[in-house]
Amino acid sequence: MKHIKYLVFAITGFIFTSCSDEFLNPLPDTAVAVDAFFQSDSDVLAGVIGIYDAFQGVNENTETNIGNFNRGVQFEHLLTEHRTDNTRNATLEGSKSDFHRYVVNANNVESEDYWASMYEAIFRANNVLNFIDIADAGNQAKYTAEAKFLRAYAYFKLVRLFGDVPLVITVIGPADDKTPLFTRVPVADVYTQIIEDFQEAINVLDNTYKSRASKAAAQALLAKVYLTQASPNYSGAQQLCEAIINSGQFELEPNYSDVFYSELNNEIIFAIQYQSGNAQESQSFSSEFTSFVRAGREDGQNIVNANLKADFDAFGGERTAVSITNLDGNLPDDENEVAKFFPDGFDINADPDPYGPNARNAGNDYIAIRFADVLLMHVEAVLAGGAATVGAGALSSFQRIRDRAFPDTAPNMITSITKEELLLERRVELAFENQRWFDLIRFGVADAVLSAHAAEMGYIYNSRALLLPIPAREINLSGGLLTQNPGY
Image 1 (tube, rainbow, N blue to C red):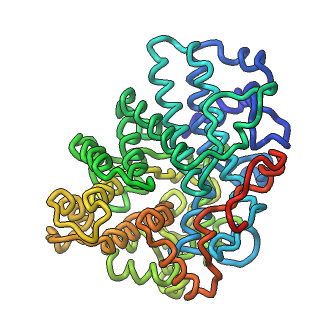
Image 2: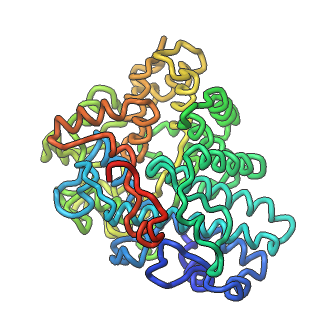
């Protein structure tokens, strides 16, 4: 998002403590300081925009000190894709290689950073809500809904990765009881708050934006929440997906490549934006996906596992060349690289600079939710936990995905869809978009798939890996009040 960082630099000194020991707990410096900032409607809007910045994070190439600068979603592939059978790190060195081998511990700095980033977004949202009365009366409902959408989005990420987490929905000042900051709340209660926040966003917001909260984004994410809960609300998810599908406001891009390189296109429902070449507004994850010709700072992340390459070869169709590359035969099947997020869409065959002039300051957007995901969630909702479906609506949604992937044989008539076929379709359609981990959990096959994958790769996997460890730093700050997940 091109204008966020500067606004946040202007307000963080007022709103968040600069004490390094409390970096993961950005409390107001003083009531006077916060009051001094929130004086007008434009100040409240700046606070809203600042929440997006917490998700955007700071480019690792710009600021290398992870202790002082949160990465937002820029490390998310480590916590998600790397912990599945999709991808791995190129080396075994450093904490970033711990994820794909299932050896993450409570001191892992990338996991700790992700926790910090999501809570930074939550605390910023709570600050905006605390001063919402300062906004113009006509904007208060909209700003409130937007802040709550973003708070729910952060909590949805946290609760799926860490399980029970502290649920903080009010500002906690320096003189207040800090117990809520370190008291883990049951997953079901966190979901209750997430649902309430997303429902308010649905009731208030419209679809003006794709790079900010919208009604459709709230509908899509709430549908995923309904599918993810321990007792899924399949009918609720189906209704939300059909509301988006029938709205006529979103469509699959005919060219799969355009989904990723034509920003905020017809398929995008919600994306976190970056700006190429701008050190303060860019991202570095695109460059870190490269390895053979190293465009990033490290040896390469998101190296494609051979079994995913095989699934692309068999079921990817037009998606395969857009998603993965063997660099014209230079890479073996178990070392293909991600092609879906080439920095700024540059051509790997371009000479002399295949990754472009700003590889480490790339502008590729982070796609939070897109229409193809909604279509496949629609199938999942109709399937409703069963082994297969022949429902006409589900078949239609599934066929739309297949027809784009295999245009030469379209219309690709679908007569039934099994749970396994749907999971496979999601794998190749949404690869490297940080969905596979959550899909395996939601479909109830994570233990089986990951155990087999670990055995194949020589890793040691056990079910403790289904939740990440609560950061040790947070437990230490809490004085032991914050408890650890089992097995860590």
